[in-house]
Amino acid sequence: MWHMYLPIAGNSVNILTIFGLGGFVGLLSGIFGVGGGFLMTPLLMMFGIPATVAAASDSNQIVGASTSGTLAHWRLGNVDVKMGVLLLIGGVAGGTVGVQLIKILRAMGNADFLISLTYVLMLGGVGSYMFIESLMSLKKTTASEVVEISATPKKQSTYALIFKKIPFQTRFDKSGVELSILVPLFLGVFVGVLAAIMGVGGGFIMVPVMVYLLRMPMHVVVGTSLFQILFTCVNVTIMQAKTNHTVDFVLAVLLLLGSTLGAQVGTKVSKKLKGDQLKILLASLVLLVCVKMLAGLLMTPDFMIAMKGGH
Amino acid sequence: MKKNHKLYFFILLTGLWLQSGNAKGATLDINLTPETVDIGTFYNGTTVKVTGQIPAAAEIVVRLSGEGEELHLKRKGKVAGLLWMNTSDLIFENAPKVYKVATGSGLMDLDTSAAQDFGFPALKSRIEISPASSDNDFLLQEFIRLKSKDALYSSTPGGVSYGPEAGGIKSYETTMSIPSNMKPGDYAVEVAALQDGSIIGSSSKPLTLQQVGFPQQLSKMAYGNGLWFGIMSVAIAVMAGLFMGIAFKGKSGAH
Image (cartoon, rainbow over all chains, first blue to last red; front, side, top):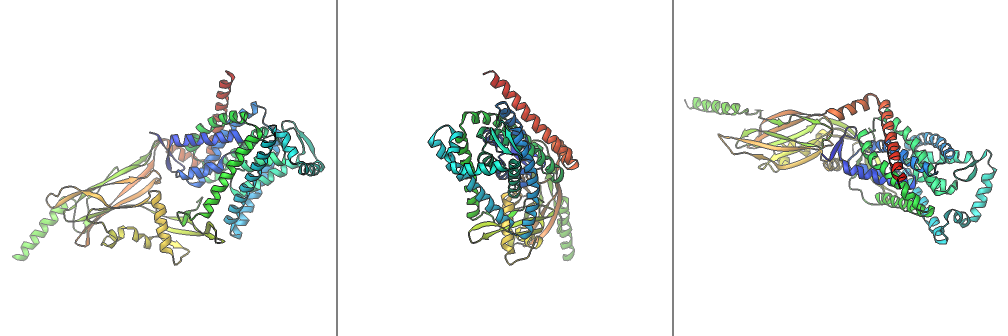
């Protein structure tokens, strides 16, 4: 009785396992503002769900978790809608470009090699930078946002000067920054392209981009990222259901039950932690995924053949 | 007279076999319980019992197999002498969806017997691997290992048990496990009896797996109207998220 059959995945799963998995990933998403697809998809595959169904059903689940998380962060005043919408527009455009780019790469051959390498380098680079930066500012003082700027004074000034020169300057109240609207649009495209190439939602790239390139406070980053992820995943879920029939509703609901709860708890945890503490935890998580991926590339695989994702 | 005696004896023997549903080189007795597996909401795989009767001196082999399908696989190899990656595409044609073999205790080495076509080596002539290469045998072994990990392929020598002999006849029985990842569709259970190094009879029965109730309704909707299915899935997810958000607000408001 503790098992349920997933009609689209064509396999059955233990209800409690999936509930727990949803809760854990929902917790991470509430704390850090990431969708958690980079953790969820491989975990679901371990439980015998085909890769394509795992990814599509996970995006359906993220819709629920990020609705729950966005609502909770909204109440705390952590959602910068203006910034979120601009990043979203850029992200959709970037995603479209990325999908075309990956087709070209695949036609050229060796795409898998490039993708894996980008993935590992990206995770390693972003994780290490975030880890070192937040560790240093945690050591110096507890007032994170002020230190962040003074810790890198030279970089900040050149960076700020260039950014001031870009037209269409506007003020983002919730984030407390003044920027050209072209900056979030462009960065959205950048993340969208990368996410499409790597086949992930891009939350873990978007969060560092908002922190370091848009200089938004960490708590607003989390709320805004969730807001943005919500719309991305609504789009992905409907597209996947329409064209590939890979959304398993039963699986998504089981995950949802856990993740919407987890997202609420996560928001509470997030509220209690300082910006730098959040960053250092997320950095550790990103580095952990990087090490796992690297290990997968270096260790002799159990099987010399593998089923191809998709049909 | 002697000739007539022999003939009489043969007719008697055939009659005996026919009576129990067996005839030399002809159809064997086989029963499946159940013949149709219903996949409902809480389905978690099941078992199918295969029973029947064979001549007392014979040995039995039972095979559950599914129709062949074309599978696209990736071959792994080392890139730059360091990193393990998917290096090339492979196509496995006519690969049975399921292939489970069990034999009686007296037939532990199926592959060298007259019924070797029931075993794994027979897959070599059945499955076509392209592009063809010199290590097709290795790839096939890896494929069997991969399928075995998912419990879709299996070989159980001695997995069939026999009942007591009576009147030159004995019953056989084996329980085939149906893993939850075995797709809905039509399968076949085949049996063959071996005696003195040759197959003396065989038979086969269809086995059907079908989704019923809730899973069936959902599948119909997902494949029938994908767009609406997607919109419904998203709507329910949003509602669940809102519900949880509101439920939690009430909770924290009390503090």
